[in-house]
Image (cartoon, rainbow, N blue to C red; front, side, top):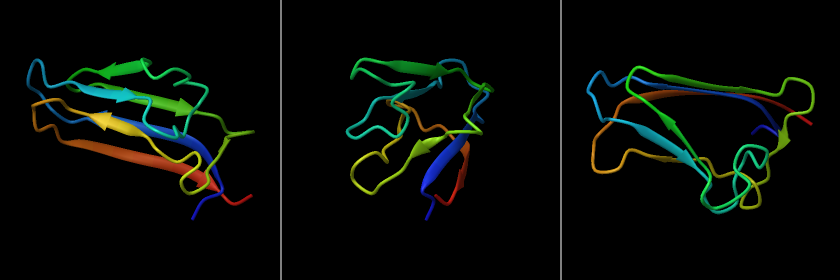
Length: 89
């Protein structure tokens, strides 16, 4: 398992209007620099891509403490692809 998360790439593969993916702050969020408050959200529209990179410092990943990335498609079924870039301590 990775000790540091250095990058996230999420591609919303849908081509249907309104089939958005919502990234948000779940319990124990993995990327506190992006999701500081419970109401923080990023919307990925159909065909859109979200990329976050922190190649030098990254963020620490610890089971149950800082490892949740919440992805919500609402009532729709949305296909997406996710790539996580990480490293050891």
